[in-house]
Image (tube, rainbow, N blue to C red; front, side, top):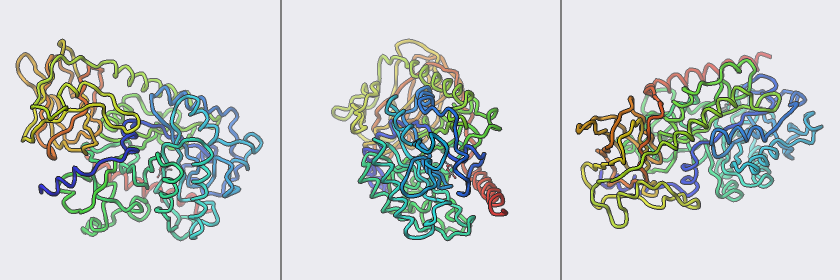
Length: 516
Ligand code: FUL
């Protein structure tokens, strides 16, 4: 076991992963022909003339993103229907074939320029599954896909993320499954955009396993090495509980991907943080009928605190409408979310004194009060680690004054991997310690929201189980912001529901398109 633990803690993030972990909240834009046809999955046969937004304004999109406080955006440059939002040379099925700006438009350019204008990062979604391109299902399609990547990664400035969707229903069109040349795609992205993370079907960021906004309670970044094509939804999902699936490889929908018990079945491990991708509406694309179904702030806060606050990335979808604008209802939600986040950051309470096990050289406990980091490397400017390993690490935080508190944030320095496996938070209530939170993983961000706010001037954190000793970068104690998080439902149940609803969705789509 000792050797195994050594191995787990030797797995650390790349610089590009560390940077993304810092900037863990981004916005998705689903936009294209589906916006105008009311579909979620276009069949690749829709006439591009339907694309005709009257007053598209990508500055308005990006201002909305700024309101949320998110760092970057990811635009569906090509969704499954194969329609390209930029004037690509790889297919005529693109923006030039639309009435928009008399065929002279380029939505990718507009969004990337608005991002540059407002200091927001720009990322691209390029669906590998393509229902329009005649080369799909042949080896030459890999050339087409690479050419599309090349155009996007060389003509639109810096790209922080390439998002590769695993969804594929080629059988719906009576087509053979495409053999994707993932390694070639990845090599090209690394060559053209070395700082970009490759998400979803890529080596840098893993899909959390559902699209409902549910994060795992115990999320690990050190997981068994994945085969990327295992993430494709169509035929890699588990078919029988016969143990064979585990031999084939780990799958993103498993509820436990990183406990010691789970890891003990594998030999090769990678750093692979999870991303929760979810829409503020029921659909990924805009549908007028869903104007009244935009999520409430409470729902969004549950998602925010369990993803961003639960060692996961958040990719929140705001779909532009047929006018080419983010709908007023969605903008209002973005504003509320952004205000909540910025107000909450101001509620940090000063810590007067910290008592903790003797620190390792140069790694004083006081350092946990600082949350600065190097923008280039993503590493913290300072951190705390105890000198020696022990069974339990007790960190006592004496506050400057008694305050009403409802949360504590803890951050591990992931340059030393992810180590904490079990911890508790106590509040001193008139000389008596009361447990206010119990958790497992911490990782690059854990916001411990208490069930009930408490008035106290002393918080105690006990780390009860850890892979070797902990490396803690930051601890923040915050005044009550009124947030209450309902305990997330059991992940396995969510997984079950997700798989069922996904099958239902595909069958429904199938009927719609294939019965014609
Ligand atoms: C899924 C796609 O099929 C949806 O349309 C959407 O793009 C979502 C983000 O990923 O797999």
